[in-house]
Structure formats: C-alpha cells, structure tokens
Length: 251
Image (cartoon, rainbow, N blue to C red; front, side, top):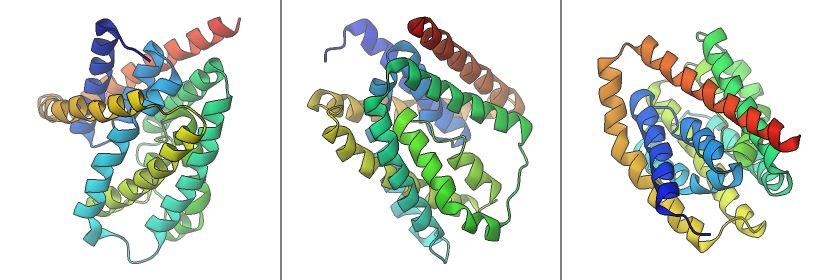
C-alpha cells in the first residue's frame, strides 16, 4: 500500500494523540490511537500499525519491572489466556467486514468510557481476581485481536485489583507482549501484515514516544478530572463517528 503526504500527516497526528494520552495517564496509546486511525482509514490498518508500538515499549517495561511481578502465576496466566484470545480476535479481524469491525471498536471504546464514568472506584479482591483471570484475559485478547482496544476488560480488570504501580505495569506489559507475539504471525498468516506495514508500524513508535512528554506536561497543567473528561469526550466522539460510518456503509 502507499500513503500520500496528507494521509501520512493524519497518521502522525493520530499516533501523537496516543502518545499524549500515554504520557498523561500511563494508559496505553492504542486506547486513543486505534479508534482515531480507524475513523480516518479502517480498523485493519489501525490494528496492524499499532503492533510495534504495542510490542517494543512493553518488552522494555517487562524487563524494567521484572522484580515487581506477583509471587504467583497470575501474570503468566493472564498473558497466555490473552494470547489465545488474541489469535481468535485476529481471525475475526481477517474475516469480518469493515462495518462490523468498526462497530466492535466503537463498542469497545464506549465500554471503556462507561466503565470509567460509572465505576471509577471499582475494586476486586485478589483471590476473586485469580479465579477469573483466564476468562477475563481471553475476552480482552479477543477484543485486542479484533479491534486493537482491550482496555474495557484488561485495564479495567487490572485497575480493580489495586495492584502496586510497578506490579501493574509488569502484569499489563507481559499481557500486551504475549498478545502482540501471537498477533504478528497470525496477521502474517491471514495476509494482513506486509513489509510496508511492518515499516510503518516501526515508524509509529517515534511520534508516540515524542509526544509522551507533551501529555505529561498537559497533565501537570490541567486538573486530572478536566483532562480525563476531555479524553473521554474525544473517545466518545470518535466512537460515534465509527458507528455512523459503519451504519451508513451497511445501508
């Protein structure tokens, strides 16, 4: 595929917005970058472009926070189940039409927004979390593989466990690394991953890293509540655009 200068600029802006979000909140850049890219191009392109930005920073964070892993197998159970779900989701990404995929992304984004608004202080006992780790991660993996946005399940679930920050980062990093290592060969198998897109995915790491300090600076200047509302409004607007275009395309 070829991308003209105008499209390249749009991709850069979408990725930069993802970097701003990651720098401001610590949340994954795909939460914002994937629906933004999907709203401009399509879901398949958005998911493929985010492969390297998902993989490389998370591999580094796995190594950096390896001493803070939980003393049981929770992180590995969560990661393996997520990888299995990601394969199922990738098969859906390859098979489903654009309109259906757009609706999946939109519903995932709406789910994240609703959970953030309705249950900001949701808490889950760790023992209960252990029992439901595999099914929760499997569902999150399906979302990640098919839409590139697992946050409604993965981030919400791990936040509810109230893990120590370093332990949370290690756990979510292992989870995303495992899913991406499954997605890459699966996407190649299904014919979605090309040399051009691999190069574009590698290049996508640059604007995300470059704009993370911008997000951190914005977070210092705005109140957390105001920044959070602005992000949620933007996400809701992107999801509405995806729903409108999907329904219009299906009509």
